[in-house]
Every structure is written in C-alpha cells, then in structure tokens.
Image (cartoon, rainbow, N blue to C red; front, top):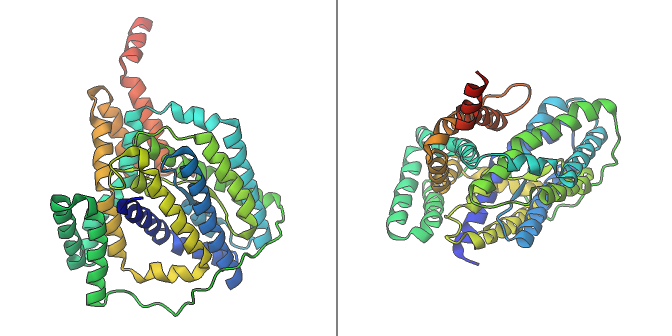
Length: 390
C-alpha cells in the first residue's frame, strides 16, 4: 500500500460525500424521516458503497468504485413528496430487483462493449471537464486559497510529483486553519449509527413514480458513465457481475435507507488515474482504501456530515479539479488522437459538457448516442455503402 493510494482513496470519498450530502438530506427530509432513520440512511449508504467497492476491487484487482445514486437522491426530492416512507422503501427494493436482473441477464454489458474507445474517452473528459473548470471559477469565491493550492500543485509536479496531490490537500487545509475559514457547524457526537429497519410496502403509484425512474436515472446517469470511466482508464470492467453486486446491495440495504448503489464515475476516475499509482495493476488499492473510508464514515452516520460541511466549497472543488487534471488531459488526448474519430469525439465531448437533458435522460447518454451516430455517418464503410446504394 502506497501513500498515493491513501490520498487518492480519501479524496475520492471527500468528493463523493461533499458533492451529494446536501441532496441526500433533502431527500431524507422530503420523506419525513426521523433522526434515527437519517442516521440509518447514512449508515446503509456508507456501508453499501464501501463493502461493494471493496469486494469488487479486491476480487477483480481493478479500481471498481461504487456509489450511491446522487441523481437518484435528487429524483427523490422531486418525486417523493407526500409518499410514505414505507412505500418509498418498497420502490427502492423494486429498483434493486431491476438492477439485479439487469446484471444477471448481461444485456447491459453487451451494450457497453459496442461503445468505441474514442467515444468513451470523450464522454469521460466531458464528465470531468466541469471539475477542471471549477478550479478557476472558485477563484471568485476565495482567490488566495485557490492560488495557494495551485502554486503548491505546480511545485509538487515539478519537484515531488508523487506527493503533489497530498501537498495540495495539506496546503489547502493549512491555509483554511490559519485564516479561520473553516465553517462552523452545530456540535455533533461521534457515536456509532444504529440500523433502523423500515417495513416496506408496495404501491403501484410509488413503483411507477419512484422505483422505475430511479432505475432509469441510475442506469443512464451513473452506471453508463461509470463503465466509460473504467474503459477509458484501460480496464475491462466486469459489468454484469458488478451490477449484480450493486443490485443485491440495494435489495439488502434498501429497508435501512440504501436507496440505490451503482458504478461510480467521477470518484472512480480519481482512483483509476496515474495520480493514484503509476502502475495500473495496483491502482485497485486506492479503491480499497476508499471502500474502507466509506465504511468508517458510514458507521458514524449523519454525524460525519458535519466534518464534510466544515471545509469551504472552494477547497473541495480545487482538490477535485487538480486531482482529475491528468485524467482529463489523457481522456481528451485519447478521444482526439485519431483523425477519423475526431469529429465524432468532439460531438460527444461537447454534448456531455452541455449538460443537456430531455425525456429524463442525462447528457452522457445523449452524448454516446450523438457521438456514435456521427461516427457512423462519417465512417468510410457507411459512405461507401451509401454511394453503392446511389
């Protein structure tokens, strides 16, 4: 185990929590959960994410990070108002069953194999691009903090590349501590969270309005980008097996608040990139570290969220953006390397960056469709067939 594994694993968890905790608490509040149930939700989400990622990463020796569905949590905020908690739990179980069946049948893995490498790289670059832009937009919020971190990053890349990200994180924390910019939150106790079982009820309305959309959102906005992230890093992920594991984890933990588990994309890119380890064969150890952190934070329940709310937003965004900088550049290079694929890759990249969404389907899926269609339209075989037909 290397220091880079520890740093990358921690940063992945930091980004995972800070990017979604506010939405999760909104979802919990929408469903009218008690404090005990809120603690149980955070326990289930932390353990489900940590253990499934640990199992998959250790068994397949790949940085297979899993995550809860942040778009799914946002969906709950919109769709679950007025729905009893027990019926929502029934909808979570329905979604988990659909995910498990999808993994067992293997159809999604066959679909993922059809994605060209250039298109996959362009999607990943587009997904991560906003994190890179976030470094510069954060300068409006706290210029000196971002400047200190950027200078530290450049110095690290120049003289101690192996510890550049660790130095970056340390400099940001030190600056915030010296200047007193850590936010104050209400006191919280570090007690171990207790699971709170909620007896599920199955309502046709809840299954249609929550369970089915939750499955669609998870597949299009989480699982597809997650597979793309690993493919772009040079791995051949066990898609069906991984989806079966995350589906079963959802079925097991849904009654305790684990609403959906799936492939991670952004956090997976942190652990699957060269910053985590120069050797692709041992990068899985960073994912193992992330899994252990998720389990530890999950055991602390909702209390741990106070820790993540302490850090200024600019600190988290800058750490994520600079940690992903290498991956963004590598993905863009791979996407635009071949002239035959360049236009299709650009269409894919720009569609992803646009964050366009219609019919309830997010930009990454539309990017794959538009990019693949462009690739086919401009391919020589397609043009030759068209000429012969004429």
